Amino acid sequence: EIVLTQSPGTLSLSPGERATLSCRASQSVSSNYLAWYQHKPGLATRLLIFGASRRATGIPDRFSGSGSETDFTLTITRLEPEDFAVYYCQQYGGSPLITFGQGTRLEIK
Amino acid sequence: QVQLQQWGAGLLKPSETLSLTCIVYGGSFSGYYWSWIRQPPGKGLEWIGKINHSGSTNYNPSLKSRVTLSVDTSKNQFSLKLSSVIAADTAVYYCARTEPYSYYYMDVWGKGTTVTVSS
Image (cartoon, rainbow over all chains, first blue to last red):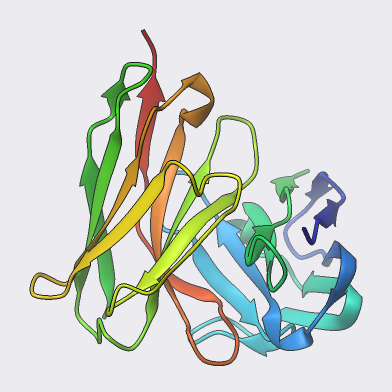
């Protein structure tokens, strides 16, 4: 199983600041198969990034993804109030085919 | 705009079978895989399995013995059955559209169904 470990568990920042979220894989992950999601209670989970660095349709350019092999990063520049949520990384490959990180909670400081 | 609407029983007793259905509004049904994911209280997301329009499936090995996924292409629906539920199956269950060619991301999600297993 490819285990994804996200850090930090909770990130406390203010609107306008920059957020850097980490996702570390226990084995190498193809960059094609690394995605990031935003989750807010009661709302549909939102795809932000796929292929490690490709923004999904309609995602603002303040969201960016980078990384390769075992280390991936989601960066949010200039945090907006609506960005405070839980973020998950996800990979495809191995067994089980799809696994998620445990999430990073981005909260308002 | 593609939307997923899901429904099913929210309260089960141990040993019963969980049954959820997700209907796809808009977009292609045959061009994607369709996944189920769950989130137990206070925990992260766990992928349960995926199915395509022809019924080809992949399951999480940890749940494979109890999970059955099915599709009804005439209704643009897909379903999850989880047998012999226990308290640890208490979770919010989500359905999601899964890209099937190059990236395997989930770009459209249902809003989730809370399922509680309790005697």
